[in-house]
Structures are given as structure tokens and as C-alpha cells.
Length: 330
Ligand code: NDP
Image (cartoon, rainbow, N blue to C red; front, side):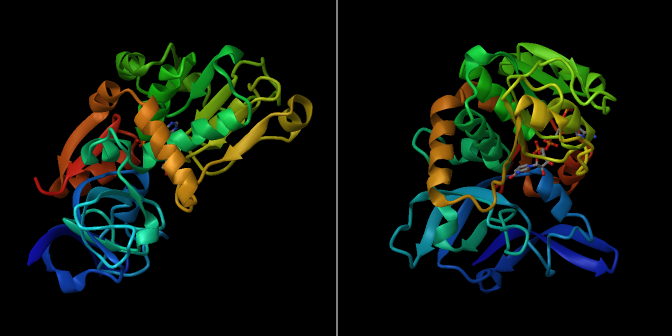
């Protein structure tokens, strides 16, 4: 039996090609659960994994795709039976292990979680790694004391994947959400998700000379990093926190320790890849209960496996709106 997968091959030292190919099951990697993948998605990291010399993929040929949702086909692990619906994010699947841009995947049972009640496999991938990281960020901020009555919460990179899910969840939880975007044409979309105010990217994407500015934000989900994160740290209210999720705007953090010392603010690191099982279940349950599904459906940009190379470039260029959902059987 053959199946389709997006195979990335090295063409020379500095370039790779990515094409949909028919593969046989004997090419699948080691693992104790084989999953018939239904949906996957294109995250920022997938964009990187389709680039040559990305520092993430070690061996070629490679099947990328850092997350997927589907149905168990075969399992030698007692936790999963054929027919069970499952979700996978993280564990370096799609980087060091073959991933979800495929009609079949073989993985370690420890990496899977059961599909949460109330979500379809398509909706789970509309959330995907980006949305899972967004909910981890909201959980971390609330675990550090953030409450709706404390004031406006900032979401950066708001029209992207992490930002869209964060905006919708925070809005649904009753927060006032200020959404930062570099694309003014996304204002209506962001308001429909739950943003109460739009902040133009250029208002906040350069470092201020002052280490402290007006106390403005009761919290922040940051997908951008770099100078924007540095600026946000100096604008946080006393004792509040920013959850650092991403680096779409840069990895350097040109800040000072002053906001930490004088305002007691917190910089919370968010990693979705190595999260323990209990946190994954907590995150997915919160997604299923706090993310309005009609808003999730409005974020979906449908795609096929063959579209992935083009979309991978678009996500690296910050041109994607919401969440790409790839139907691997289309
Ligand atoms: P997207 O490309 O969907 O969204 C990123 C958004 O950031 C863009 O849509 C754009 O939003 C904004 N942006 C892009 N470039 C710049 C720039 N130069 N300066 C300021 N803003 C910019 O990516 P995702 O939402 O999927 O991922 C966002 C980040 O989060 C990535 O760095 C990704 O690697 C990281 N991530 C981290 C995870 C973790 O576990 N920590 C898990 C998942 C993602 P707009 O147009 O609205 O301004």
C-alpha cells in the first residue's frame, strides 16, 4: 500500500526540493503507533524546516510537518487502539522524526494525546502547534495572576497563528484585547475574533530610550520577540507578565533589567515542544472549552499537501492570516 507524503530532498549543499511523492510503509520511521493522518497545518517552524540549512532537520530525505491529527491505524501500545482519534504537536516530530505532511505517520505513543471531546481533527489542526502555544501562554499568564479586571492585554503578531488563537481565547475569557498588527487590513478580522483595540505595528516595534514607559498592559502574549518584546517589557503594569512565545520579529532582546527590578514584571518562557502530558491535556481541554468554534472556523485557510511549499514561504514572510489547515487526503 502506498501513501502520499511531501518529501524534502537535498539537491546540493545549499538547496532542497519538496515534492509530493508516493511512498511505501517500509519507509516510515520507527514507532509503536501508526496514524492515518487526516489534517496537518503549516506553522512558522514548518516554514523553516522547508528551507535548506535550517538547523532543525538533520537527515534527508525528510518528511516535515510538526503536528497532525488523525486516526490510529495500528498500535502496539495499550493506551491507543485502532480507530482512536489522536493529536500530535511537538517532540521534534517534523524536525528529527518524519512528520505530518503525509497520509501516514509512525510515532511514539508518548507523544500523542487523545483528540479532545468537542473538536474534530480539522479543528484540532486549525489550532495546531501555534494555537497550543497560545493557550500555554494564556495559562502561564493566568497562573501568574492575570485577570480580566486588571486591564488591557496585548497580543503581538495578532493576525498570525499564535496571535489569532490568543486573541480569540482572551476575548472569550472576557479580557480587553489590544491586537498589534503590521497589516491594517486585518483590523476587521481581529475585531471579529475579539480584539477591542488595534495597535499599529510601527507604534511599538522600535526600542524606546526610556527603560520604563507608562504602565499600559496587564499582560501580553508575544509572538514577535526582538525590539517589540523589549518595548512591551517597559510598558507592562506593575507585577504583570509577558509570555514570550515567538520570534517572528527577531531573536535578540535589547532590554534592561530596570522593568524587572522597579516594576516586578515577569518574562515567562513558553515552549510547546517538550511539555509534559498533563500540561498538554490541560491545554487541549482549555482549547476545547474556551475557544469559540465559529471563530476558529473563521481563521481557517484550507490547503492541500502540494500547496505546502508555497505556504511555507508565505508564513516566513508574515503573509499568512490565521491558520492554514492542510487536508492530506485532498
Ligand atoms: P505566523 O507567521 O502565523 O504569525 C506571525 C505574525 O507575526 C505575522 O502574521 C505578523 O503579524 C507578525 N510579524 C511577522 N513578521 C514580523 C516582524 N518582522 N515584526 C513584527 N511582527 C511581525 O506565525 P505563528 O503565529 O505560527 O508563529 C509566531 C511565532 O511563534 C514564530 O516565531 C513561531 O516559531 C513561534 N512559535 C513558538 C512556539 C513555542 O512553542 N514557543 C509554538 C508555535 C509557534 P501581523 O501581520 O498581524 O503583524
